[in-house]
Length: 264
Image 1 (cartoon, helix red, strand yellow):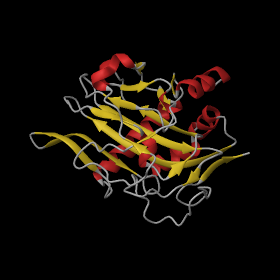
Image 2: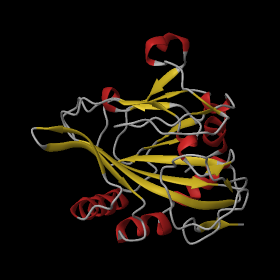
Image 3: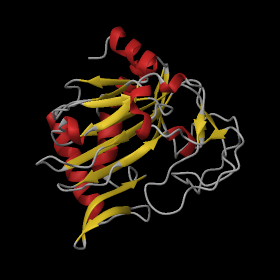
């Protein structure tokens, strides 16, 4: 499933393509969950692009506690085990899930950004596993800067729509103009079949194309943390906001919000 070479590639590059790691039964389960999710979206749903009043790029997150298909996948598939192997971590906590949909014809590019600055977690043991539920062409996929998780920098969060985040965290830097200087970076993108997944570190800088393909682009992304993860309250807006947690800085995340999935 996940051998040492794959986990070492993830540790070195901050991103790795995982071929055929998600059984099709789970893909169908997640599709059902997404249908339920957007029939009854949460307050966090956001629409980034519309054409003639039709939503073509939108997302929602933090629904695993109310969408039974999401919870079933997270707790009963092999996804947490995959996360632990990639992080080379003995403990695996769920951080949250995130569904992003770009319908056919979406032209809006997801800007270059780093997830770390959005989150109320610090530490290097983490992984986002991005699972496409549709076949993804190379020109409709995500892009990553290899090794950017090792820059030891935290960049200001980037909003996909509306005003920028307001932050007072001194360690945050403005993300460089990557798009105008692409030749200066080692950028990689992946073609994905159904059953594949892309795993990346929270600090890995990434972006995504619009949907130029003939398929929908539904993606279920689930985020995990590992051994060294600790809570941190940022000095500005966080995403997700997690309004009901009562953790203090530097505490482990173990809680109802961030349940322990594996502990050994």
